[in-house]
Amino acid sequence: MTFQEAQAKFSAIVNSISPTMSSSELVQKQRDLQALLMSLPNIPEFNPIAQAITDFSPKLKGQVTQAVAVALQAQDAVLKEASDLLTQVASKAEANAKILTFEKPKLVAAALAESLAKLKELKEAAKAGDLGATASKAEALLALFESIRATVKEQ
Image 1 (cartoon, rainbow, N blue to C red):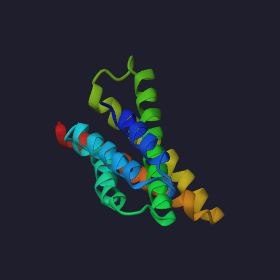
Image 2 (image 1 turned 45 degrees about the vertical axis):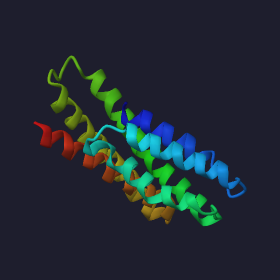
Image 3 (image 1 turned 90 degrees about the horizontal axis):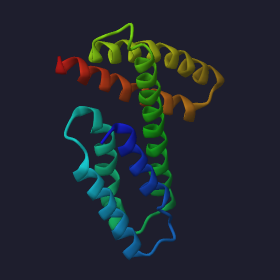
């Protein structure tokens, strides 16, 4: 399972949760989150998704409030942003495969190059005063940096 696939599954579960769901439906969503958690590879790259599930799954035992639903959706937005960054990095790395022959250095170099562009976007969002976009982009960059760190540690 890739980070992007795990994020898509998390997103599907989160987006199906609403404050008007019955308790049995909420229990099923909690089971779905736990099943996803158990299926995640035990590597640092997947820690943001595992942490999001760990943080929010217990809240589904009770009634889902609007605040919990909003918090889940905010976490989903951060993970989507991180997934998009990883997808972009992987795509660029694959495009440069003829130049870079080693898989991990290729991914790290592409991720670092992409992170510079995303830092500029983060700066612009902050200048524009868009705190939501700024926070989301910052969280996505942190996830990308964690992925880079984990990749470097493996070598």
